[in-house]
Length: 260
Image (cartoon, rainbow, N blue to C red; front, side, top):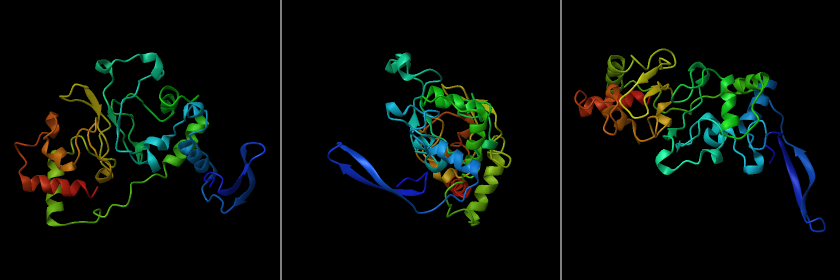
């Protein structure tokens, strides 16, 4: 199944040549995407394109960590620049882990990454060089990738249309307590905040589709939204609601967040 080419190949084992041979390639469909979106889709999913990765080392694609633009639910220790071999890290000197973020709506939430070190999408080409081993993308190819990323959306949310008394109470609590940072159409102020954590200043994440993006926080150390609203696992003052949210309020705020 050649997903990028919309074909199925008939492959046979050639015992004389000791290799697999493609005997036929059967088209079963054609792309309905605009050309630039189709090109961007190929860049996003390909683990053999040397512009994106190093296929001879196993190859990774954007979708390896962001399947369908979503999150793999993992926290990764990644180098800021260079390759893995040259760092020579010891366990005590490893960078802090960073939780994979979803990519839907990300084009409207610059700067990127948890520490806000990437100003715009063209600058993301360095990720393909420093972390994925690729050669990097031209501005035109970044444009194609951007066109594809604009098509990404959160998974269907069964709670989106809920307007129960509990959800409405949570909406009021959110407006009172959360919108100083999680504001605007993208539910982020796109600012770095100096928080009471060892990692220092962190970029405010968008909350769209947050029901599907656990585990939570920059290091993926909080398993559930309930823990986030109660602040039981961490020391970020803006999130530490233990003294002011009772159980009913925490449940209400969690219920509202699940509708976003």
